[in-house]
Each structure stands twice: as structure tokens, then as C-alpha cells.
Image (tube, rainbow, N blue to C red):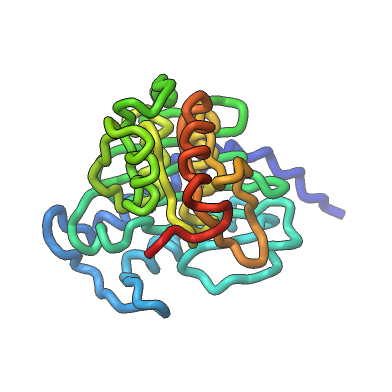
Length: 277
């Protein structure tokens, strides 16, 4: 009787890098820099937009990644949720186009986010912004990289003159504590916002309540490997692959600045409570 040879271990970094690049080329086929996308657009439940580009990239990623690691579960913004993922040790978490509104409008600040979870924590991930030519990647214990070069968070130790990205209701408590903080222009892709904390171009990244696993999982790992932290207001790391994959208010910063940010937020935004409208 013929016995199939054992499957060789997968180089997840190479797989994610190659897959993200291919997905990026697919998405760029619909993207129009400075102009509205060529893709068909419609509204999902709740009114948020989705395009045929989102769906095409999602289908490509599901086929490619599931083929490479068939034992892994799947969670994506654009795929009907299969709760069988809750029983899997390995899970792919994907946002085919994070920042669809930006993509549709011709703004280059959108990304493709892919993470692999093992036992509930991200162990490999990429955040790829094809229209900007930026590929962030990390593997657990191996550091974080942007286009192959090692990155790290900023070394800012206090809020004075800190560069902050995120919604105004979360920025304002920091502004009241330290008048010199700077509110940066909006980064439409949440994954890209957090990745820029990892590369040091943003000091503090703030996240409103109701983000999802697919928005943050890959960037969370990249940030950790770059020396930063992403937690809720109580300092708890985001849990992943739950039945309801939503999160409350989150903050990202380097390890030294993080506690100061949490203290300012906690004074006005209790843990788990959404910010004011």
C-alpha cells in the first residue's frame, strides 16, 4: 500500500509575503489613484460599503491560504462566519481590503491584512498597502519588518508633542492632559494605522469600540514584534477567535508611553465602554 509522504513544514513568512503581493495586484486592478474605483460597489448591513474588489481578493485569499494550510479555520470580514473555527488550533484572520471607503475613493491608505492565529494568538502576519508599496510583516519572536528592513516603535517617553492618530473622542482626553500633542490626519485603514505605530511614524494609535479581529490581528503582532503594545483601556491584550470577534476601545504605543496613554483614557473612557458619539 502506498503511503503519502509527510507534508513539509510551511514557511509562513514566505507564504504570506507572496500571497499578499498577489492579492495586492488583484486589488490594484480595480484601484484608481485619486479617482473612484472601477469596481462595482454596494452596501452591506449597517450601510458600510463593499466592492467587487473586496470579494475578489477575499476569494483569492481563502483559496490560496486554505490550500496551503487546510487544517486552519477561517475568519474574514467578507466571508460568512463558520463557527467551526472555534474548534481549530490554527485560524486565518483576513481583511481583504481594510479601508474600503478609502479604496473606493482613490485614497492609497488602504491595506490587505492577513494573520495566522495559533491557540488564540497571532503568530504570523502581514499588512500590505499595495498602492503605497508598503509591506509590513512579522513572525512571533522574529521581529517586525517594513519592505524587508527591521522596524521599531518610536522612543517617545511622554505625551509631550506625541503624534496621535485616531478618532477625536479618544484623542481629546490626551489633548486635555498634554496640550502639545499632535492629531495626525486620519489613516482610513485601521491595520495600517497600527502598523505605523510599529514603524515609529505614529506615537499613539487609538481605536474606537467595535473593531473586529480582522482589523487588528496582523497589526497587533507587527506592533508587538516592533516593541509596542496594543491593549484595551484596562491593559488587557485583545482576545481573538471568539464567537463574537469584536473589541472595545484600544490603544497602541511603545511600551514606555503605553501606561500614560491608558491612564489618560481610563479617566474618561471606562474599560469596554464605547467613546461618546
